[in-house]
Image 1 (tube, rainbow, N blue to C red):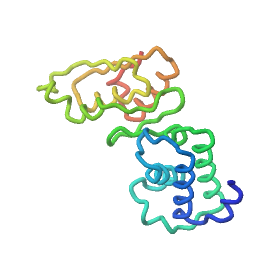
Image 2 (cartoon, rainbow, N blue to C red):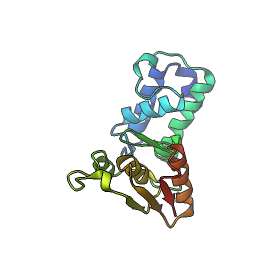
Image 3 (cartoon, rainbow, N blue to C red):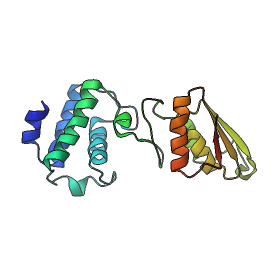
Image 4 (tube, rainbow, N blue to C red):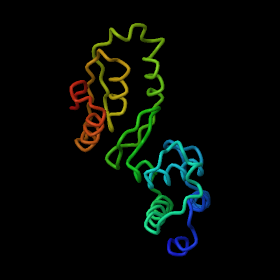
Length: 186
């Protein structure tokens, strides 16, 4: 299917329509950051092509090189055939305004706690500057530990997990946010 599609699809608009059709026909589940086949297809295409994630329209009619088209089609095919979540394909998951590295060593982050941390756990925490320590138990990717570090600037954050593989992912995310001295991973 990729070879036939590759010869007929030339623009991002073409690939977007193709991806939405493939995702819909495959009856994929969207629950890791995208709610619809369109949203997931747009994200996957933009991310694969290293384009800004918030600017689809200016690129819709851009013609792709053969290698770009092949790259996107391979990602679409992996999503449909292997049913790999897009976050694992792109190695990126979002919680609010924060992007995190993810791979198969961790579950894809999604948490209502992330939303609560945007307001420093208000109304339960009335003086966030007085929080001096916090623990993210079963940290996985370390996303909640990182969000806590941003929400509670005076706190030392501990991130713990039984999985050394998950801790390696958490460590990468902690490094990416420059929080090595603020977060501890055990």
